[in-house]
Image (cartoon, rainbow, N blue to C red; front, side):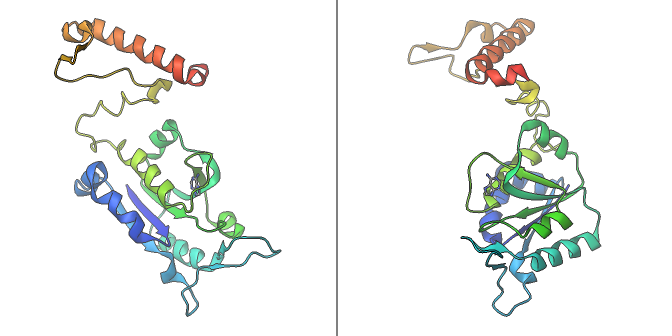
Length: 225
Ligand code: ADE
């Protein structure tokens, strides 16, 4: 998968891709991430990419031209499956969206800033709008990092234990069951006997039951879906 991220803050974006799972995915050649500084596409001498709103109102708006130039250049080089805009009024990110988008080949992610982008950018280029939750961030960059992390770990071959992404919370609309590692007893707190029994069918049943109970208690809405 190739991900092209358009941003006014490329330096803010870089470090999450230089550690842990995302770094490994890049090193294994399973994903390529390219950052594009929107200011490089500004057509004025101050390298501005924002301007006042027509009609008045607080907050600057990201101008159509630099974004159009950047996206058009990328599109002239290859085909993109989606051109995504990170915005609080987009579709809220969820696991099933991450699952299906992890299969795509080339995507562009546009990070909004200030009040957002000129509507004409959305009309011309954007094929999907994604929010990471019902709150407003100061820019789309952190949303883009969240989205990329959720996506990249699902690409086959990225996680060493292939089944581990499948047993994550939210796969199958269930939260995860409790998990334990050594020691079997710590400050009087014991690991449930069933997990030490070696009876794997019974362990699987126990895990399913616990996942169900945990979901029912915390997120009953998931069980209704
Ligand atoms: N930009 C600002 N707020 C955002 C949010 N909640 N999700 C995605 N992008 C954003």
